[in-house]
Image 1 (cartoon, rainbow over the protein chains, first blue to last red):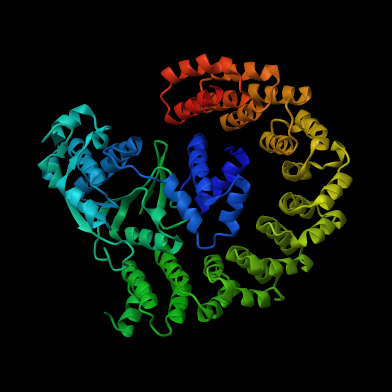
Image 2: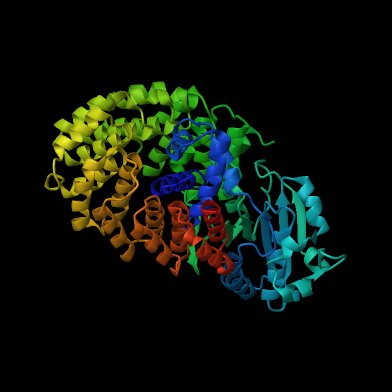
Length: 276
Length: 354
């Protein structure tokens, strides 16, 4: 299937308008392949007809969601979107701990929304251990939430396969994992102790209402699963639980610009981050 | 659960989180008179965060009552509130349509414009007839908006009227909008009108060139290639995206085995300029469809380009070109490349050539 640039841009704009996810031009093949897959399933031969269908004849957004499900099939693994984590570790975290240490406040709170089987919150735990000087003098709390009880069971267990740890730097693998059997990697207890897993439905408007003073919210590649109104509601919830100066991290292709104007936008080392 | 009085009190609390939660509860607990209470608060509220929460809560409501109460916000002097009104009404579906019909007759041209914006965002095929009513609006901006939206909605029922507007208007912006709309909804008569309006390159004013190219990309034929080549000489670097789209559109609608030599020269020239990588990617794939001998060599040369996207275009182009002498080159690339997408395109092209 061919995807003329004109239609790639139209589709990209449509996806951005509806989800805040932006596909760079070098992703044209990635998008083309999945678009082709979806068009075949939905019985479309021509890209222009398919885009027209999405724009005009899909008022409930069902077909659009099917396409997005293909485009956003998320693998979860440790140190995913490494360059974004670098921005967190080297800029935002340093700024926050400096500011807090000066105010003699040595607590650090992170919310990890849509934590799935736990790779992301444990990754954050490892980063905190590595990046915070005098770590033992800090009280660190990572709350990891998901709507799916089954993934939380696996997350609490904290045992992973080779695929999940493929991007873990070897020295960290040695320091923060044990190997209970061949091909299995269990997260070390001190990291496990930093994370509390909780079953939370972000669509419940009362959920997390009384949570406050979080320094960071990680909600990467999750907002895509909500409609416009709910997405805004969830982001408002995050705004409410962050302290002033706290950061929210979305997936690298996601943007808040069409969802909320309450956050300040900062560009750090080629990444956009949002700050309350 | 808090009582109504408590919620109202919370809505006026000093703490912005408390006000935001109260707004949510007022809507979702269906507090009687809640819409008016929130609209009143919206007009007083200074926190951007709480304002956004209130608007988002109101968006979740559907029905006649919310439509009736939100319409007056369109006349607010506060731009945030006006835009909030448009957003909320745009989510109301068919119920809002009948109210918009009335607003299209409003004496205030801005209100008529908002009604058009809302109708367009309602995204219902039934709204085109109402939008088309504005083709008779005396305000030129509203007329332009109506033409633009009809084009986006791709409803051909009003094409004759748009053709007529295009031919008789001396307003360049309206003519540009007509051209861009006709790119989607134009018919044979539209092509005749455009050809009559622009018999040669000199007749296309600078402002109309972009729109002309957009029209030609969708509706043009071989007879427009000459005009495009004249444009390239003059505006090739500034308008390269539109020019490439127009050429691509014409070639797609008029299949052939070989590219005309002057066009091949033009496309080859583009590959040597500093147009963006994505445009070069697109050009290489386009060229892969044609059998001119020179093209094979051009594609091979680009398999060594530093930019992944350009190598990818060359690889896809080679697959389409169909010369299996490229197989060893693609096999060698497969050994040394590590970009996942590029590797897939190499494999696909190898498959096509085997």
